Image 1 (spheres, rainbow, N blue to C red):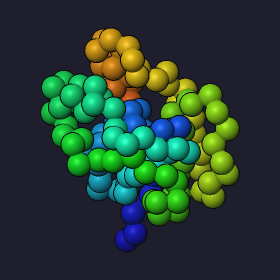
Image 2 (image 1 turned 90 degrees about the vertical axis):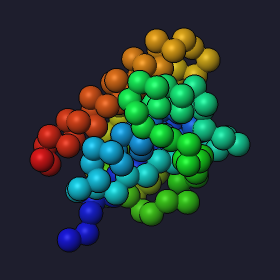
Image 3 (image 1 turned 120 degrees about the horizontal axis):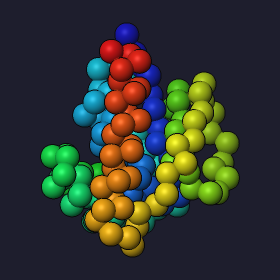
Image 4 (image 1 turned 90 degrees about the horizontal axis):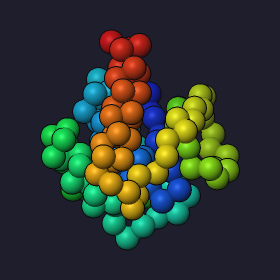
Length: 130
């Protein structure tokens, strides 16, 4: 059976959407293929996010990189992070916005808080399908 494709979308695809993709790959891989992308890209993903995910959640994001929406398969579900921008129309069956503040440039505590919110939302998806 083909897995449902989820795309986590953000402006730069360097922090929140990358964390969501990483959590998704850990907790949702049985039923979903998880991707992340942005309306723009950054040369590298946010290194604070990489460090926090490794130190506090044991997830290595080192191999992840910033992608544009055209670089990923067409998703079944689109989840935007709360970018306060209008994301281009991405064909999908379902669309959600998580309304998360970007922790970039803020304290480790803000990164941890954001990561915990993302993990909680990912685990809710897993529970529905578990």
